[in-house]
Length: 285
Image 1 (cartoon, rainbow, N blue to C red):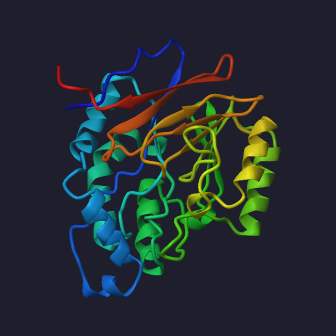
Image 2: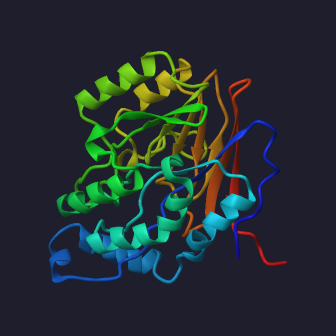
Protein backbone atom coordinates (compact mmCIF):
# COMPACT_ATOMS: atom_id res chain seq x y z
CA UNK A 1 0.00 0.00 0.00
CA UNK A 2 1.51 3.37 -0.99
CA UNK A 3 1.45 6.69 0.83
CA UNK A 4 -1.66 8.79 0.53
CA UNK A 5 -1.62 11.30 -2.32
CA UNK A 6 -1.13 14.98 -1.45
CA UNK A 7 -3.08 17.87 -2.99
CA UNK A 8 -1.95 18.81 -6.52
CA UNK A 9 1.24 20.85 -6.58
CA UNK A 10 0.43 24.58 -6.93
CA UNK A 11 1.62 26.34 -10.04
CA UNK A 12 5.20 27.55 -9.66
CA UNK A 13 5.76 25.69 -6.37
CA UNK A 14 8.91 23.77 -5.45
CA UNK A 15 7.94 20.49 -3.76
CA UNK A 16 10.13 18.69 -1.18
CA UNK A 17 9.55 15.16 0.09
CA UNK A 18 10.84 14.90 3.67
CA UNK A 19 11.17 11.50 5.38
CA UNK A 20 13.08 10.16 8.36
CA UNK A 21 13.85 7.30 10.74
CA UNK A 22 13.68 4.35 8.38
CA UNK A 23 15.73 2.10 10.76
CA UNK A 24 16.27 -0.48 8.01
CA UNK A 25 17.01 -3.23 10.51
CA UNK A 26 19.87 -5.40 11.69
CA UNK A 27 20.68 -8.10 9.12
CA UNK A 28 23.59 -9.44 11.14
CA UNK A 29 24.74 -9.91 14.70
CA UNK A 30 28.15 -10.13 16.33
CA UNK A 31 29.41 -10.93 19.80
CA UNK A 32 31.17 -7.53 19.69
CA UNK A 33 27.78 -5.83 19.92
CA UNK A 34 27.34 -7.26 23.43
CA UNK A 35 30.20 -5.10 24.68
CA UNK A 36 28.67 -1.65 24.16
CA UNK A 37 25.48 0.34 23.54
CA UNK A 38 24.61 -1.77 20.49
CA UNK A 39 23.28 -4.48 22.78
CA UNK A 40 20.54 -2.07 23.90
CA UNK A 41 19.91 -1.04 20.30
CA UNK A 42 19.47 -4.67 19.30
CA UNK A 43 17.00 -5.24 22.15
CA UNK A 44 15.07 -2.10 21.24
CA UNK A 45 14.89 -3.22 17.62
CA UNK A 46 13.59 -6.67 18.55
CA UNK A 47 10.97 -5.34 20.98
CA UNK A 48 9.63 -2.35 19.07
CA UNK A 49 10.62 -2.67 15.41
CA UNK A 50 11.25 -6.25 14.32
CA UNK A 51 8.52 -7.40 11.97
CA UNK A 52 6.89 -3.96 11.90
CA UNK A 53 9.02 -2.09 9.36
CA UNK A 54 7.15 -1.03 6.22
CA UNK A 55 10.20 -1.23 3.97
CA UNK A 56 7.97 -1.60 0.92
CA UNK A 57 7.33 2.15 1.14
CA UNK A 58 11.02 2.76 0.41
CA UNK A 59 10.93 0.75 -2.78
CA UNK A 60 7.79 2.59 -3.92
CA UNK A 61 9.04 6.11 -3.18
CA UNK A 62 10.65 6.85 -6.59
CA UNK A 63 7.45 6.12 -8.52
CA UNK A 64 5.29 7.87 -5.91
CA UNK A 65 7.55 10.95 -6.07
CA UNK A 66 7.31 11.11 -9.84
CA UNK A 67 3.53 10.76 -9.74
CA UNK A 68 3.25 13.61 -7.23
CA UNK A 69 5.67 16.05 -8.90
CA UNK A 70 8.34 16.02 -6.18
CA UNK A 71 11.34 18.24 -6.97
CA UNK A 72 13.70 17.30 -4.12
CA UNK A 73 14.09 14.77 -1.32
CA UNK A 74 15.31 15.35 2.23
CA UNK A 75 16.13 12.56 4.69
CA UNK A 76 16.67 13.62 8.31
CA UNK A 77 18.50 10.60 9.64
CA UNK A 78 18.32 7.30 11.49
CA UNK A 79 18.89 5.11 8.48
CA UNK A 80 20.05 2.41 10.91
CA UNK A 81 19.27 0.97 14.34
CA UNK A 82 22.80 0.38 15.71
CA UNK A 83 24.99 2.10 13.12
CA UNK A 84 26.59 -1.08 11.77
CA UNK A 85 28.33 -1.23 8.40
CA UNK A 86 25.83 -3.84 7.21
CA UNK A 87 22.88 -1.60 8.05
CA UNK A 88 24.39 1.36 6.21
CA UNK A 89 24.98 -0.78 3.12
CA UNK A 90 21.41 -2.05 3.30
CA UNK A 91 20.06 1.49 3.62
CA UNK A 92 22.11 2.59 0.61
CA UNK A 93 20.62 -0.22 -1.46
CA UNK A 94 17.09 0.80 -0.52
CA UNK A 95 17.77 4.48 -1.22
CA UNK A 96 19.80 4.03 -4.43
CA UNK A 97 16.82 4.39 -6.84
CA UNK A 98 15.65 7.53 -5.06
CA UNK A 99 19.18 8.95 -4.98
CA UNK A 100 19.61 8.19 -8.70
CA UNK A 101 16.29 9.84 -9.55
CA UNK A 102 17.06 13.11 -7.70
CA UNK A 103 20.85 13.40 -7.80
CA UNK A 104 21.95 16.77 -6.36
CA UNK A 105 18.41 17.26 -5.08
CA UNK A 106 18.73 14.39 -2.60
CA UNK A 107 20.03 15.48 0.83
CA UNK A 108 20.71 13.49 4.01
CA UNK A 109 21.69 14.42 7.57
CA UNK A 110 22.59 11.73 10.15
CA UNK A 111 20.54 10.75 13.20
CA UNK A 112 21.63 9.57 16.62
CA UNK A 113 21.29 5.88 15.63
CA UNK A 114 23.59 6.51 12.65
CA UNK A 115 26.28 7.79 15.04
CA UNK A 116 25.40 5.18 17.65
CA UNK A 117 28.92 4.26 18.80
CA UNK A 118 32.45 5.19 17.76
CA UNK A 119 32.62 2.17 15.42
CA UNK A 120 29.62 3.63 13.53
CA UNK A 121 31.50 6.73 12.40
CA UNK A 122 33.60 5.27 9.52
CA UNK A 123 30.61 3.68 7.71
CA UNK A 124 28.52 6.77 8.49
CA UNK A 125 31.10 8.95 6.74
CA UNK A 126 31.02 6.68 3.68
CA UNK A 127 27.23 6.70 3.48
CA UNK A 128 27.07 10.45 4.00
CA UNK A 129 29.54 10.89 1.14
CA UNK A 130 27.53 8.55 -1.11
CA UNK A 131 24.16 10.19 -0.44
CA UNK A 132 25.44 13.79 -0.52
CA UNK A 133 27.33 13.84 -3.82
CA UNK A 134 30.82 13.40 -2.37
CA UNK A 135 30.55 15.94 0.44
CA UNK A 136 32.07 15.11 3.82
CA UNK A 137 30.22 14.80 7.12
CA UNK A 138 32.83 17.04 8.78
CA UNK A 139 31.77 19.92 6.51
CA UNK A 140 28.52 20.34 8.45
CA UNK A 141 26.96 22.78 9.25
CA UNK A 142 26.74 23.40 5.54
CA UNK A 143 24.54 25.66 3.39
CA UNK A 144 23.37 24.10 0.12
CA UNK A 145 21.27 25.50 -2.73
CA UNK A 146 18.15 23.44 -3.35
CA UNK A 147 16.08 24.86 -6.19
CA UNK A 148 14.96 28.33 -5.02
CA UNK A 149 15.91 27.57 -1.40
CA UNK A 150 18.99 27.72 0.76
CA UNK A 151 19.08 24.52 2.86
CA UNK A 152 21.35 24.38 5.91
CA UNK A 153 22.37 20.85 6.93
CA UNK A 154 23.14 20.25 10.63
CA UNK A 155 24.74 17.22 12.27
CA UNK A 156 24.47 17.25 16.08
CA UNK A 157 24.45 13.41 16.12
CA UNK A 158 27.39 11.88 18.00
CA UNK A 159 28.13 8.79 20.09
CA UNK A 160 26.86 9.28 23.63
CA UNK A 161 26.08 7.35 26.81
CA UNK A 162 23.61 4.42 26.65
CA UNK A 163 20.94 6.38 28.54
CA UNK A 164 21.13 9.36 26.16
CA UNK A 165 19.78 9.95 22.67
CA UNK A 166 20.47 13.68 22.51
CA UNK A 167 22.28 15.82 19.97
CA UNK A 168 25.03 18.34 20.60
CA UNK A 169 27.40 20.53 18.58
CA UNK A 170 30.81 21.87 19.61
CA UNK A 171 31.26 25.66 19.97
CA UNK A 172 33.02 25.89 16.59
CA UNK A 173 29.95 24.42 14.85
CA UNK A 174 27.65 26.86 16.65
CA UNK A 175 29.91 29.71 15.51
CA UNK A 176 29.81 28.48 11.91
CA UNK A 177 26.03 28.03 12.04
CA UNK A 178 25.60 31.53 13.46
CA UNK A 179 27.70 32.96 10.63
CA UNK A 180 25.63 31.10 8.00
CA UNK A 181 22.31 32.20 9.46
CA UNK A 182 23.23 35.85 9.99
CA UNK A 183 24.54 36.42 6.48
CA UNK A 184 22.07 37.23 3.67
CA UNK A 185 20.06 34.20 2.60
CA UNK A 186 21.33 32.65 -0.65
CA UNK A 187 17.79 31.83 -1.82
CA UNK A 188 14.19 32.94 -1.61
CA UNK A 189 13.96 31.39 1.88
CA UNK A 190 16.05 29.30 4.24
CA UNK A 191 15.23 25.77 5.46
CA UNK A 192 17.16 23.94 8.18
CA UNK A 193 17.51 20.15 8.14
CA UNK A 194 18.44 18.41 11.39
CA UNK A 195 17.58 15.06 12.95
CA UNK A 196 16.66 16.60 16.33
CA UNK A 197 13.45 18.66 16.65
CA UNK A 198 13.43 21.99 18.46
CA UNK A 199 10.09 21.29 20.15
CA UNK A 200 7.84 18.28 20.61
CA UNK A 201 4.47 17.56 18.94
CA UNK A 202 2.50 19.80 21.34
CA UNK A 203 4.97 22.66 21.18
CA UNK A 204 6.56 21.65 24.48
CA UNK A 205 10.30 21.16 25.14
CA UNK A 206 11.57 17.65 24.47
CA UNK A 207 12.72 15.58 27.45
CA UNK A 208 16.34 16.44 28.24
CA UNK A 209 17.80 13.01 27.43
CA UNK A 210 16.53 13.21 23.82
CA UNK A 211 16.74 16.90 23.00
CA UNK A 212 19.17 19.01 21.01
CA UNK A 213 21.53 20.71 23.43
CA UNK A 214 21.24 24.43 22.74
CA UNK A 215 17.80 24.20 21.12
CA UNK A 216 16.65 27.47 22.73
CA UNK A 217 19.34 29.45 20.90
CA UNK A 218 18.39 27.90 17.55
CA UNK A 219 14.67 28.46 18.16
CA UNK A 220 15.37 32.11 19.00
CA UNK A 221 17.26 32.51 15.70
CA UNK A 222 14.17 31.14 14.00
CA UNK A 223 11.93 33.66 15.77
CA UNK A 224 14.29 36.38 14.54
CA UNK A 225 13.49 35.31 10.98
CA UNK A 226 16.88 33.75 10.20
CA UNK A 227 15.17 30.64 8.81
CA UNK A 228 11.60 29.95 7.75
CA UNK A 229 11.26 26.15 8.11
CA UNK A 230 12.91 23.44 10.20
CA UNK A 231 12.64 19.77 9.18
CA UNK A 232 13.46 17.03 11.69
CA UNK A 233 12.98 13.38 12.59
CA UNK A 234 13.80 11.59 15.88
CA UNK A 235 10.18 11.52 17.09
CA UNK A 236 8.45 8.63 15.34
CA UNK A 237 4.98 10.20 15.27
CA UNK A 238 4.63 13.00 12.69
CA UNK A 239 3.68 16.54 13.68
CA UNK A 240 3.45 20.10 12.36
CA UNK A 241 3.88 23.26 14.40
CA UNK A 242 2.87 26.41 12.48
CA UNK A 243 4.85 29.65 12.77
CA UNK A 244 4.39 31.34 16.13
CA UNK A 245 5.32 34.97 16.78
CA UNK A 246 7.07 35.19 13.43
CA UNK A 247 8.96 31.93 13.91
CA UNK A 248 9.53 29.10 11.44
CA UNK A 249 7.43 26.09 10.51
CA UNK A 250 8.56 23.12 12.64
CA UNK A 251 8.04 19.89 10.70
CA UNK A 252 8.42 16.41 12.20
CA UNK A 253 8.23 13.77 9.47
CA UNK A 254 7.79 10.85 11.87
CA UNK A 255 9.10 7.43 10.90
CA UNK A 256 8.50 6.33 7.31
CA UNK A 257 8.75 2.64 8.18
CA UNK A 258 7.41 2.40 11.75
CA UNK A 259 4.35 4.68 11.76
CA UNK A 260 4.34 5.04 8.00
CA UNK A 261 4.49 8.80 7.59
CA UNK A 262 6.44 11.59 5.95
CA UNK A 263 5.98 15.25 5.18
CA UNK A 264 5.70 17.23 2.00
CA UNK A 265 6.55 20.92 1.72
CA UNK A 266 5.36 23.14 -1.11
CA UNK A 267 7.43 26.31 -1.35
CA UNK A 268 6.26 29.32 -3.35
CA UNK A 269 9.28 31.41 -4.45
CA UNK A 270 7.09 34.38 -5.39
CA UNK A 271 5.99 35.11 -1.83
CA UNK A 272 8.48 32.96 0.14
CA UNK A 273 5.85 30.83 1.87
CA UNK A 274 5.83 27.17 2.83
CA UNK A 275 2.78 24.91 2.86
CA UNK A 276 3.63 21.64 4.62
CA UNK A 277 1.53 18.46 4.70
CA UNK A 278 1.74 15.27 6.72
CA UNK A 279 1.20 12.08 4.76
CA UNK A 280 0.62 8.55 6.02
CA UNK A 281 0.10 5.13 4.51
CA UNK A 282 -3.03 4.92 2.40
CA UNK A 283 -5.62 2.78 4.12
CA UNK A 284 -7.22 -0.11 2.29
CA UNK A 285 -10.86 0.76 1.43
